[in-house]
Length: 189
Image (tube, rainbow, N blue to C red; front, side, top):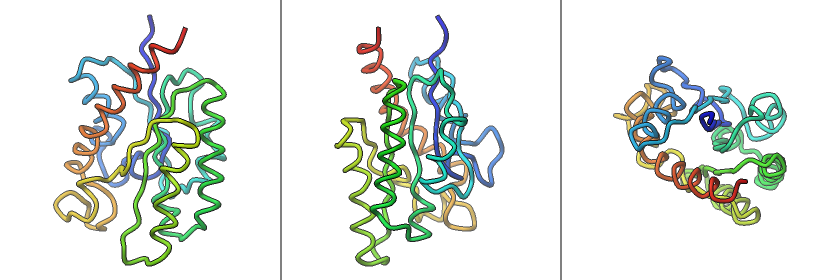
């Protein structure tokens, strides 16, 4: 039996911006899953600077056909560019729809706007859980939970997680990935 493939469709956070290859989220998540007894191949499909629309445009070539579970981790660049929330929702909806049609199990990771961005924050924040609920897919509320805005866990730019920050993300994300892999294995032939 071949190893299951978990693909991280994302941006610079999943691409490992500013980090050594051994510190990148795909490598750290694969290690965290192995610690929990899941021997899976974690594929990094993160491109620095990508917004949700960019992920949609490249998902056909970036997410291998053999992907069992796709972790969709986009949205930070949309936030920084103040992309209209209705466009983000439409693009996320298209990503999830295409993945489910393969069929691939989907875990959608949310992103949260800081409160100082005003009314946009609420409109942005509700997009991710709404898309997950509409498609009945698993939802991880905030990819950067416990890491965002912490200077000890981010690079000097105060945006991208450092190696310690990525390790926290991997350890927090791993149980949900495990749960989805277990749930998906019960529904696949």
